[in-house]
Length: 185
Ligand code: GRF
Image 1 (cartoon, rainbow, N blue to C red):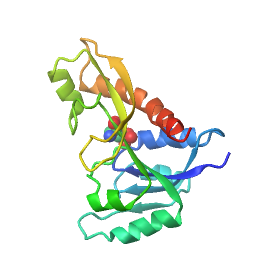
Image 2: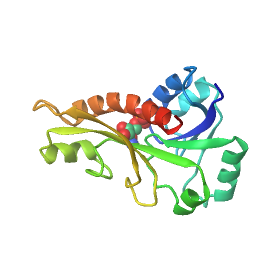
Image 3: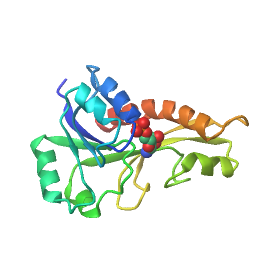
């Protein structure tokens, strides 16, 4: 199978990246992770880039970033999908416009509910019985692009933000890979 190249944007631990890397090694998975971008050199997920010898770039968002140079880099590497996986910065609108391929994100709630940060605490404060994760296309409005896939979990009375995170993330790992398969089906 000829795989397309994907780029994963991270900011933190990179557990979604790790799962995507696992999926990408499967023969039938439609993408190969060819490039990793982080907004911080402290992202633990960068260790995976080094371990798997995947080229990566750390963006210094305190400096003015040359969008054209990033777009050129993505073009050079024939990237046809960007996956945001715990990328904690809002993507520049011009970048979204100019990168004329797919950009997707995974969010730890059942969108359109609980957009933004601090999701688990807000879900618990909202006395929800159900929560989950959503994979969606990235649009110029935060956490609002077209939904690709959602996975649900039941919230138990014993759950706190930490247990909820563990349960939701376990769903995320399958949801992200399944979404990518669906996109390129
Ligand atoms: C995930 O839970 C995702 O929903 C959110 O950020 C978290 C990233 O975790 N957007 P990781 O870096 O993939 O471990």
